[in-house]
Length: 276
Ligand code: AMP
Ligand code: MN
Ligand code: MN
Ligand code: MN
Image (cartoon, rainbow, N blue to C red; front, side, top):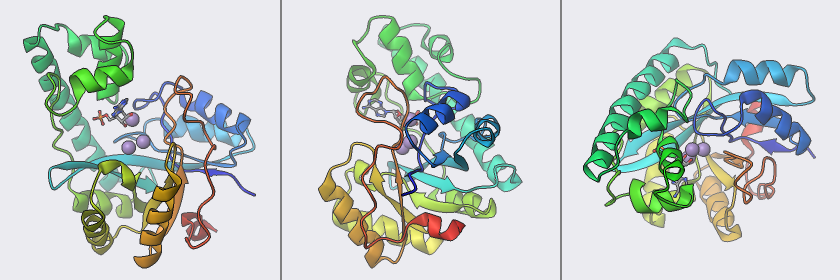
């Protein structure tokens, strides 16, 4: 059986491995097909591709784009994209500006809470292409404000906490258009993680499909089997494709490993049917 893992991160966003180390680890873990899906950027793909060429693994170029939909942040995966596409890259360049502005606001808010130098501090943990909340978390842990990244998020970086700044991300429509322009497939990442009611999730999925989205990430790392079943039924009912991905970020998170995923339920149409 071919092992697919279609959602992972490198140091080109908020993962901790270089693209090369990520691909090597995927091979060690028995992954046959790996998608690199860094947040809002594709800078890791060239390196991942060239490493994959030397090894028994297929690299699918991907991206995970941050979207603001009805005041909520939703993540949309673009799989099998042509990362050199100009429409996509212009969109991602806008996202980078949004991230820089948000990072400045996060640093200002932390500064008001008595924590200074957060912008420079977070930058030390980030590549020069993407600055995210994880990098602020790493800075805050290093300076003793919390014991680990999870605790920092709870204490500082989520709604109603001193370092929280809601991102004003891309629209769902633009995001789907960028991915489709780049010849890729757009899927809703980890649909169970947004705490949407069943009705609202169906509403999101319907709108997404009308805009040109084609699938749902039915299997995600650390997911409850009941959620998998519910999402598989939704994909089936909506006549959409299904994908599976670990959302691997770092070997330090012992709960999530590359390729360690339950199989897609039999009533789903795997997204890779489109790639054969
Ligand atoms: P950003 O896109 O910069 O707002 O950061 C979102 C990223 O932060 C996610 O992709 C995760 O990698 C990470 N993240 C979000 N919530 C948590 C949490 N509670 N604990 C640890 N990491 C988190
Ligand atoms: Mn992340
Ligand atoms: Mn995500
Ligand atoms: Mn992810």
